[in-house]
Image 1 (cartoon, helix red, strand yellow):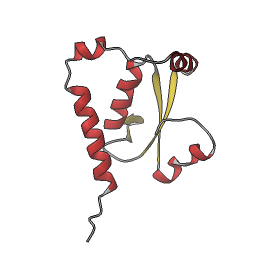
Image 2 (cartoon, helix red, strand yellow):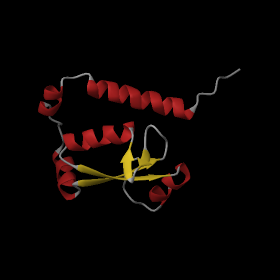
Image 3 (cartoon, helix red, strand yellow):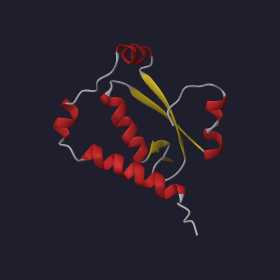
Image 4 (cartoon, one colour):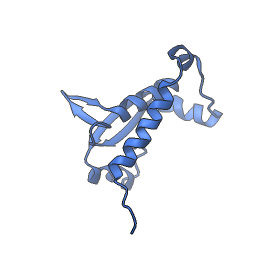
Length: 110
């Protein structure tokens, strides 16, 4: 009999591992580390300083609290955006609505 793996558990493990990897270095070393971007990536980033990020509402990874977007995934993406000199604008939505921007051809991070 096959064992079904719960989607939430898989997402939790991926986010947990990513946060663990990000937090295992000293903060000073994290800030000093640079990200190697290609010239094309740098050019794109200059034109897109604000990254549009859509996340499915799935506490504790992404959720709204007191009008603010919160969660492990949100914190991780904010840190990654800061590392490349960008900011992130978040939208939290249902899993069903998450696919809509893809169908409309809107470039976003998920």
